[in-house]
Length: 352
Image: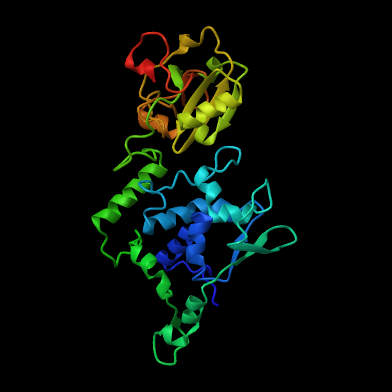
């Protein structure tokens, strides 16, 4: 067979189909791959391997198959947390299973994808597709099913087998920004706008149509206040980044894992900075702030503030406090039982 992924990037919809396979779970991926390929090769071993590129695969796939990451053009739930822990969506996908097969207790379903080769240094891994559709394989190999640009030409474009017709019919052709010869629909324009706003951090993954404004319920955190000076967070603080600094759910999990009572966040786009804090200094409220930077919405619970860092602070119109090198607004929370209201009265902002 010919190679399905050969580095050619002119056919966006074809690349998106590959993205759909690699970002989907093993069963879903196999139901498509068995009609296209005999083997799957992945680059592994860290560095610039396929896992490092995987968020782009999901985003390209989602631009054509909008149900990969519904309502989220950036596919923010497909990736890794700080420290390399995969998100649930990443952990279940075919690419992660094949790349990590045999490591950390992770194994591919070898009744679907059988491991047949790993190179000496673990950079190349090859898996055999089990239960390949012989009917589709025969159809694709038949010269009569190739479309040549002229009789006798060497340039003969293949076609997808009939078994994949329902899948191909689901594809939404994607008009790229650079394609000035194609008229773009209002839906394409809206999708691009949403994508760039979320990549810049101006919108969270749950914003927009059908998003519902973020996670429901209470995050299990009690808002205490906001400061701009890192020293006011205490000396025993423990740092983390990534989603721990932009989502309350991850910040709470980080604080609990660190055995800390408090957590402070400073969001920066899709990621951010976070500190787990065992005890706050007695005078921390002396530096309290209440400005637009403090109220920058969290990515999951968007009615709550996650502070800001750098460009997000600049967009909020706030600057670094005296003595600080970096522009920060640290939103400070106390960890409480999920769904529990703290037994004291306060303003609506206190009941976060």
